[in-house]
Length: 232
Image (cartoon, rainbow, N blue to C red):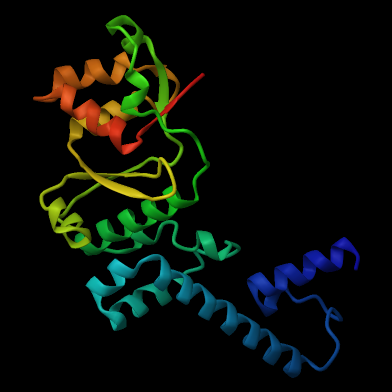
């Protein structure tokens, strides 16, 4: 099939009958439109199911009817046009006006992004063995590629796990096979931001020493959670 025909079919399937060139499909116009409607309904259903599977806590919090209403409006808005099903949920949290629901959706999307992120060896507390103070502070690290942080505007984290009650941010990490969630304070979020690119471990340590009441414990929590990748 010529590339031009393939592009025309793709545009029609993605954008609807208005993009249907004359003579592209065999049959009368009514039959072609019926086929396109069946295809569109199948795509819409698959997108709605993908949103349900991506945001189970959000769906439970909102209730089935309200979640279905909002997810259908999100799909019908055109915001997801052309996306693969795995990426359907990007931006859904911003669509939600209820703070708890929006925070839940951000946490769940961060979890999914972390789960699918690139593999990398996480820096561990055991890697500190044999280092002196100068070596530890100079150790090059960067934020692990599976790390995500979700700042919260509500107490939504408690709906994920009661132990997270009062958390202002969550760390989502996957140092090995399992995704982990850890409550963070603003100082720890700032320390992680300093390691977005390769930098000495001393940079986040210095930040926590200045802004956290127990910087030593805070950096140990981040390392133990798999927040950093050792470089080199």
